[in-house]
Length: 144
Image 1 (cartoon, rainbow, N blue to C red):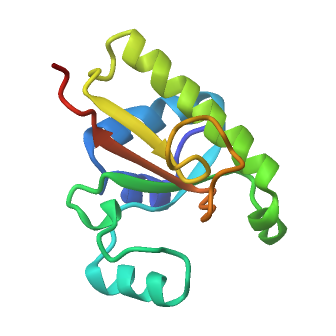
Image 2 (cartoon, rainbow, N blue to C red; image 1 turned 45 degrees about the vertical axis):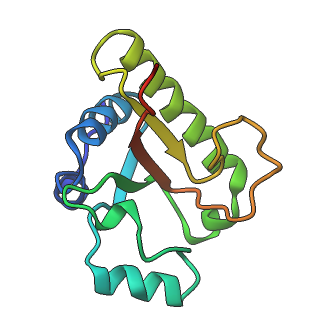
């Protein structure tokens, strides 16, 4: 069974407990590596300047981080342009998240957003910025 190495574990541990719980479950079935959890404001600014992020108000910059970047493993440099691989992985993660909410292992007050379907409408052709490794949690709007 796959598990996180020391570097991935350290990055994941900088994240919100919901993300930790989610990716601990994901890695049991789908080998993956955490490439970034919490980001300092300086790191976030650097990524915006390089075009890898679109905002200085990233959920990566919260502590604990409400965002995490995770890639399927093994991963080679040519995989950065392999959107099919990222769509497959994000679909798997989203399915695990929904099952964990259904089972009560994650409170149903959270939504999971993925960097290939920012608006969560399952229309994958309406995205202007693709971020294959990105996952974030946000509180659901209050009902009623």
